[in-house]
Length: 390
Image (cartoon, rainbow, N blue to C red; front, top):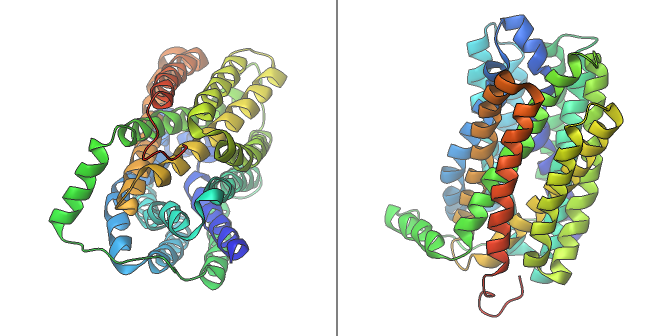
């Protein structure tokens, strides 16, 4: 049952990140095709993550009422079909509308997966299970970027989107067939008062709001780097072709390893001792990308990705341990912050790119990571909740 659960959530995480981030390598091409700048092109990702963030506030509470699996299955199939439809849109506005629907659909899985794991997996193994789920996210993000980044050198971006949509349909089917039904789910009322009380309870907690801030700045930093690194590498002095830039998505392999490894390490040592160290790794990786040498840039991307997925694995599993009640709402608030960071910072980074090139991007991301480090150090000083090691 553990293996079926982990494999199903791995497939769901794969599909979610592949569908969300397959458009990142296309952004320079879309800038050229639609005569738009980098910040405008980034909307193809930002509208999806923005709508996903909004949807999280709805789908999490819905899953508290109707159940976890039905919401997640419907979400995956809807997002895959909308992705295939986006390839057929005749205008930029039409593409953005479909991307918004994709984000809204995927909120049904993103909001519920963490809650499902926290309910069904023994607390002793939640870090490992969450790390493997986030590993699926990393493989999906890598595969989505890799497939489209290479394909658009040979076929149209429309065809690349159809391919990604087809793969997501397969992943959705696997998810539907093998995910066990919830055993520990207890339906909650959808009465507005109970929802408001749940949100208020989470914000009164000493640690949960800090974890929400952490999600915003970490994801904002990560998406900003990958949104604009393609623009940098396609320009001088590199003049790399699109396929090679797409192949650099293999740096996600470091995130696949770190999400499970650091998640397991956090189970042993405690999250307060691990989170700040992963953010320091992200800062080190960012510093290396500021050099002109291509090998140093790639090594920096590897370290940055390793640190990010480790940090996300630790922070997201911390939510399930910290929230006492209404865990679905707590996960929704964490992921709302996570994807709001992707949407807002991902587009705001375009302003820094146009103002200062990669130095501007480095300044912006560095500022976000300093905030993340300060928050992590504050989290480390919090007393354990109910005597439970975190």
